[in-house]
Amino acid sequence: MDSSVSSSATVSNEKLHHFMGKILSNFGGAASTVLAYIGDKLGLYVAMYDFGKPITAKELANITGTSERYIKVWLANQAAGGYLTYDPASQRYTLPIEHAQALVNENSPAYPDSKFYGFDNHSGSIEYARNKAKEEGLGEDRIKFEVGSSLNFPSSIEANSNISNDTNNNKSQKEVAEGYDLITFFDCLHDMEDPQGAVAHALETLKKPDGIVMIIEPFANDKLEDNLNPLGRMFYAASTMLCVPASLSHNGLALGAQAGEAAISLVVKNCGFKHFRRAIQTPFNIIYEAKP
Image (cartoon, rainbow, N blue to C red; front, side):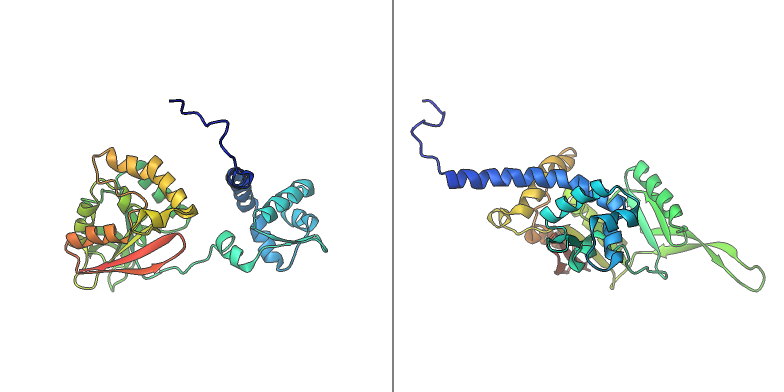
């Protein structure tokens, strides 16, 4: 039987144009990602935010020391994508305050009285993290990175600390953290070979009874049919190309980016945690809280 589409089949131009619009939107989004990166690197978003009112291409170019002709087309692209708004009467562009929160705001609280420990089984990533910490002026008394897997990171870790006493000022000693107040999994549990083993080890190394495990996962509903939307499309693509292969390469569970709350809850409770809840969610992530 010929599997080709019959020449007598009726084609709906409306449906065809609608689908072509989807394809065009995909291409436009892919191309515009590069321009968003340029806007960040050249400080264009920051300059618009600092300007504090609608701005012209010439004004933005002057402020940032860039070419007005390039800025004109960059602004037009950003307005076409809905990143900026455009007023044809004044020919000025505005960066909405809500958009600025995602594109500009780099300020967040510091936790000066806390100590952080980061573990990764990839030594190159650990070395990179150490260098970045030095660039930010953070010493090992504040943050420390070590090679370790989710199944064997230590329950206690030494960190250099300067103390003062009557006989020897600024004496260096070792501080030992016995158990952790907070253990975090940022968008990684679903990728792991043994997520249940990782959560079980977290429980073992957590301070009792007040320690907390925070698990951040991609936003997902439990049923596949409830994830058939633009966000689900993106996360299923990530699962196909990264999350599932990463887990299956070690014969893992392959939960995938769209695991959903029911699956994550099952993993956590099977490890002995008595309390599990969805603490908060954003359009892109769900933050879970687990307690002993």
